[in-house]
Image (tube, rainbow, N blue to C red; front, side):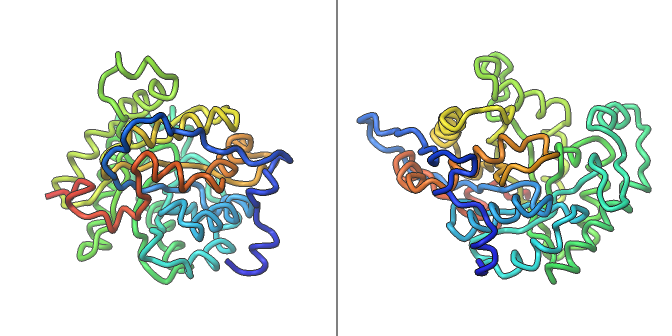
Length: 317
């Protein structure tokens, strides 16, 4: 990271909120260590503001995360891209966080995620506008990064929705057919509602999976040859305390499988950011000096999804 980034970026020692950094809970319970699994960890909302950018870049250079998802309409995308393009592509995937629900820089949103879900199932979506929005955002990514995105996901998981998923996969096939980006599948850790309701984070993950149609998207992507993550971890309500998020992280890591993707939203709390509390808490936990010990103890290796290969993620035949 540049000297300017080091001066302006958040630091774990400051704790972001003025407190000591939250150490992830110990998992040394005397049991034998599990077999090592490899997962990707992705920071969403890159470009949203300088606080998100600085946190994401610092965690990427610390090798705590292995992917950044960029909002190319957001106010600080160009500033973030100017530094992100120098990250080691062998350790960090940088992709597009396709946005249809937040207005940026004169680009209007198509509506709330609830509105899009209803319109998608009623076949009332403005398909031409969606295709144009995706093409514009891909253009903005390539103009700043000088390369294609390594992956595609979306704000509020809208790329899974009926008709939107067809546009997304068609555009990616036409544009990058010889070297497809991997795509995010927002599949819940468990497909059983009864298992999911036992944990608040499990209920939200299950609802996202079902409401947006994660499995339908997976099947369609599989038929076209895309690489995707196995399951999505990291779903919660952004209201956890530092120790609470540390407990959630321990749970996700202990139950992770090869090829899973864990999303996170670290950053410096900024006014106007609806999840500013969660961003500060997440950064403190992900930047904590004890995190590498936690990863070793639970047997998890953080790696870019693009490098996990057919045996770890689901290489779509």
